[in-house]
Image (cartoon, rainbow, N blue to C red):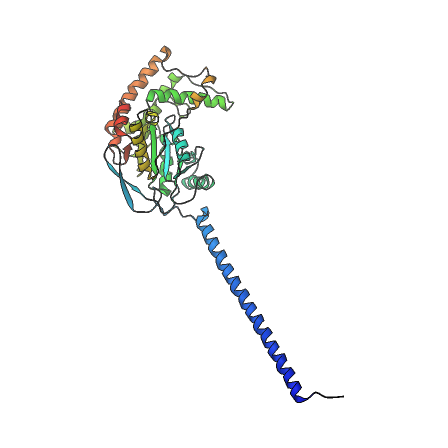
Amino acid sequence: MILPSSHASSNSIHYALQRLSDETVAICLLIVTIILVGCTFMVFISSVNLDIEASSPKSMDFSSTKGGGAIASNQSYKVADGRHVETESSSVPNLIDFYVAGFPKSGTTSLLYAFNAHNETSISGEEYCGLDKRKFSTDESISHLKRHVFDHLDLIPNVKRGVKCPTSIFDAVGLRRLSEVSPGIKVLVGVRNPVKFFTSFYNYRVTEMYDRGERYYIPPPETLIKSEWKKVSADMARFELSLLQYNKTGTNQDQLNKLVEMKKSVQSIPSRIFIYDIEQLEDKDEERAAQFRSDMQHFLGLTESLEPFPHENVNRRKKQHSHPEYVDICHSAHDGLRKFLLNQASETGKWIKEEFIFSPDVIAGGKDYFLELED
């Protein structure tokens, strides 16, 4: 047997150690590389999660924001009557920025369609009147509203979110609750000739009954001078009785007594109100109509113009299905009711023109034409 020399043995050991050292270094480098790649991936995932959480409804803190869409520096704009009105620019999302609060049959659906088509507004295609339900507490009502917002509206900055409930104007509880989470919310209120309002609202309730396949007692319209049916009454045609609740004008004792009789009260609500007449939505004078839309645009703090308003009237759309209970207020059978409503309408128009629109919190869109329509 021939034994290896000590020199050959030494070379073999040296080679083995060098090879082992190279492999160890390679493995260590591989491990370090894997760790670095893993850390980088984790940082990326964390940043994505933060972005998702930032846009998630659960992480949006609405309680600390102001109305008008943001907490931001104020801007001013000029409306048709020459006044300069401040509005707020958008930076921080708010719960609700504007409220289409009434009156029924006064063009609120036309506004809904216009806002649905606008790039800077988000509003549900359905009415939301949950805020007015007194059977719910304020916390419950706001919780329901948040779910509605999360389910139906855009939750991104620079978009004004709104809800529509045309009967909300009758009871200030809804806006009072909403103002607790959106103190600067802006309110849009449409009016019309009170006689036409009463007629249209009454016939709408008749149509509603048939559309739902229901049958119930429909009171003669004359009985609604002293009573109410599904929010239809001569008192509801006295727009000032609803608007007085929002504390934009002084209130005399007779008005306070009437509010108490109707189970209403005056509440301090800081919201600004944009009031318009339904006739302004279909104004054929293009220059005047454009100025009216501009007033509304700037009231809401929008940068893009509003397009001409579409028209929607459920009773006109279903005119071929006229029902026997419909009231024709011009028929001689309703002379007494018509005269009563006309007398009320005169007082309502006078109050709106001489008191309501002079509040610093009230803007009359296209003021000159608005005043003409209220005569």
